[in-house]
Image 1: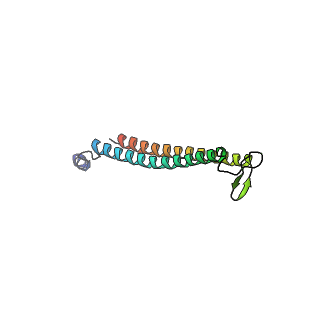
Image 2: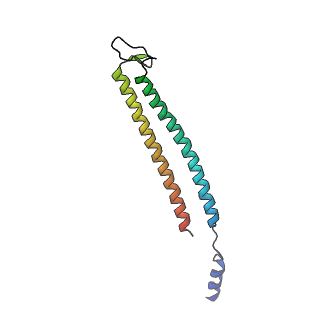
Image 3: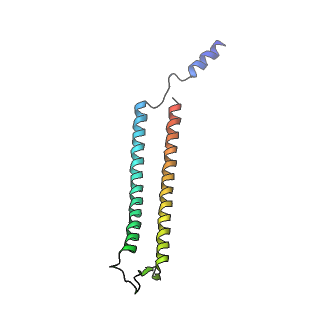
Length: 129
């Protein structure tokens, strides 16, 4: 029975093998930097698109000098080559704003989900110590 115990002891790992705390910090810093870079790019595109919608909407409703006006002072707007009335143009602009808000919420949810995955991975690794 003593030989069995000796063999069992010889087969046990002699030391724990794992990533050092310094390596874990370097990996954590690198992934955080990648997330920030990717997040900045997404938010820059989102902000640019949102700004374009706001500027376009503002120009559409406030710029009376550059658009043709009818006899009663209403703007004439063309959407996809078709004349659209004031109410229809306003509805289209509002729908675009709703779509942009939904897009921004979706991006935020995706970022949160990715962050949660990274947090779970890091917690799992720290528990293995």
